[in-house]
Structures are given as structure tokens and as C-alpha cells.
Image (cartoon, rainbow, N blue to C red; front, side):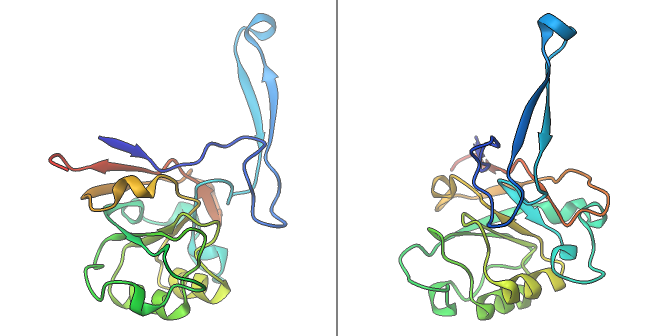
Length: 192
């Protein structure tokens, strides 16, 4: 079974404050042009997307320079919706992160720098959140300086609670990109 973790992109898609709005313009129609196509205008961090190190780290890898293996891995969802403020260390398990894509079901909360440091030290492959942002600038810098990609605006994480799954969210190969929209999915292992 495949679970779609991506939000649709439309002109109503919420964007981070001061990011460019989404623009979708009809470019060609079958009756007139013989084919159908839209022209898109949006920021790299629109909808469900991934942040590459270059987003916050001077000289950091751009999205086209990141190894594809960073965008695919065994996933883990942590439900931290019950707390308030930044997500603290005592709200998450103390092991089980090595080489995993760790996804936070937050209800809009961000990680604390302590959690970001812990996730990096434990060897997580990537992190993600249902929130518009994984956390403040310090959290981004901790994760991205360690080349841990950050997935934001994920959806349907509730469907993965208690499941074993493979997370896949490949970015567009944007030359020099600080990030990219992704089509994030979870492939649930048979038996779950």
C-alpha cells in the first residue's frame, strides 16, 4: 500500500510568510493548440518540499548535489501533538533513529535545537514534519550543516503511526536549488 504524504499545489496552497505565492496560468488548450499545459510560478519551498543544506549553510550542497539516497529510507513517525511549544527531548524515544527518515507529527510545533542535535548525533538520514517549518533558524542550521535533508508540509502522517514503511520523496533536479517541491510517499511494508 502507498500513502501519499504530499499536499496539492494550487494557487490556494499556503506559503511561508514572504515566500512567493503560487501562480498557475493556463498556457495551452487542446482545442486551440492541440495540447494542454499550464505555466507554473512558485518558490522552491512551496507545498510539500525538501530543504537542501544551501538553504541555510553558506557553501552548503544544493538540491542537485545531494545524493539521491538521502531522499529514500526506512521511516519512523513520532506523534508529538500532545505537547506545547518546541518539541523537547523528553517527548521522543531515546533510540531507533540511525539511518532512518524521522517524521514528526506535530500539529504545527517545531523542534527544539536539543532535539535537532540529538537526531543528528543518532545518525538520522533525514527528518520531516507536518508543519510549515521544522523549527527556527538554529534548528535548520543544525540539521542542514550535517547534510540531513528537511522535509516540510508533509500530510497524512497519522496513517503511518505504528507502521513499518519506506519513505520516498525525490526532488526536482534544480541546478543550484536551495530546495525543491517533492511528491512524498510512504510504501507500507506488507503485513502492516
